[in-house]
Length: 113
Length: 115
Image 1 (cartoon, each protein chain N blue to C red):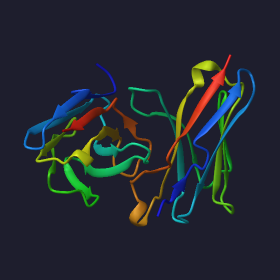
Image 2 (cartoon, each protein chain N blue to C red; image 1 turned 90 degrees about the vertical axis):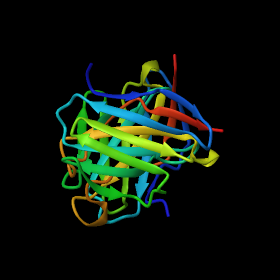
Image 3 (cartoon, chains in turn purple, green; image 1 turned 135 degrees about the horizontal axis):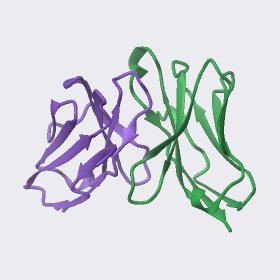
């Protein structure tokens, strides 16, 4: 397995469910990112982790909870989401924060009913 | 307030001709610019980047031009191939300030290359 992988690729959940998105990078990078892409909108940065420490929370609602147990893994825990949270969630990594070339995973397509 | 704008939602080009994708930005703190390509059901793939100390960077069929005074950059693909058909995103970041280590993306341009 190479690059950045994300699971699941597709997820349908109800507003009362709790689910988690997983990202894994095999590039030896130290920074990891969560982005959200809603329909007809640019990618929006949600969270940044650098050497496992959260360095950025871009005013994301608390129903999204990130976790970075090590530099290779990043999770996004979801609970009590709203239908407007339906979007493509992309994970990315870079050598460290400040190295601007970020490498993206394939994304998780989330639908909240 | 959208700091990176791609004003053309789509572009259609004949195979073998040049594709020119444009991007404008407003934040004068941006000093590093990237182009990504995205196929359906895949994540964005890094294509080419340029630092503000340069005005041109080439990599094979792809060339990025930067005009700092106009806050404008463009991606040229020559010759265009049907496999280039995808969504192209422009992104920008700064080496300092609030834009440090953060990519700000444009809305994307859908490129279609016809055989």
